[in-house]
Length: 391
Image 1: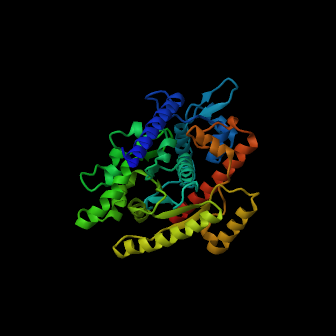
Image 2 (image 1 turned 135 degrees about the vertical axis):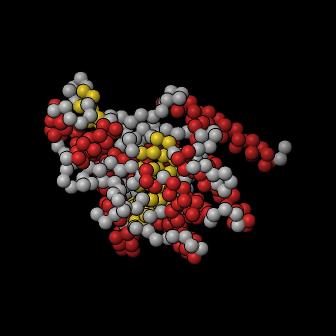
Image 3 (image 1 turned 120 degrees about the vertical axis):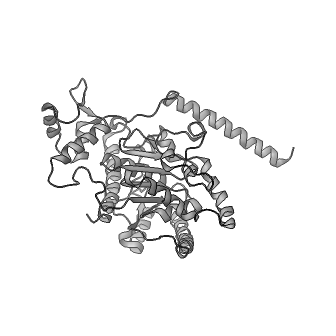
């Protein structure tokens, strides 16, 4: 037995054991065949998201208008995300300012496709994409999240375990492959967030990286960088916003996503090594996308922004790095950073986001500080979406 074979067997054994343990962990959190469910929101949380007073929601309920909330023993009212959507529709009908409660696309507005990218792992890319997609859905947008990362962390956050739930495919690869691609709707799945659908990912996505060089050599099929955009066109009317979580590498998948994008969000951890890595990433991106542009790709964007992630305000070197980035890129750096928080990381242990967990699981100050940070960042991004529609 060669040394290489021994390593192969060892790695394979480790993978099998880890997969078995992860499946046991998931079965403990979520029984077999069960799907994740989103918690219900208090009337106070719902009122804050809708921009109305809690007393107004109480009056609607007493008047028999809108959805029927769950009344618990303490007399507090709880609403599902679907209830919130119904409330938005009800309130929108009674307002004189269109888009106040349903802020999505109107006639003539183009689909917003936001690619979330970074060359370096650990920058908070997937966490940023997940919270953005979920907050947009809670705010009344019709959202499609696409997991383009073969590691499939975005999928796992939304209850899909790739090696168990996607044995027969079901990723974007099935829709963009060069031979016998399936319709886009065949790979879209609903999530437990009302208004949020997802295209999950797994290792099948790597096949696109392997097959594209052969397709380029044979000059077969459409150009690789148009394939994601062509598939999104099939479902364009169904969504307001698409959020794509790209892999942490500049391959054919990422370039195709960037070609389909109308906006680019680059996550940056404010450390010197991360910023140096981002510099190399930007140089490579510029060169490769220049080639794509010359080949006919559309490289025009409504906006590009850098978002500082895992930021610790008390860290002197991080503050220096943030100041450096702002001096270099000015308005291209979002005003609000995503704070490093135990609330966000602890939620991830149970494959949840901060929008899913109960406030009672954390100290009030820790939860509210993290939530304010995320809401501010996502609010700033969604404001850019509105501006791209001329609003």
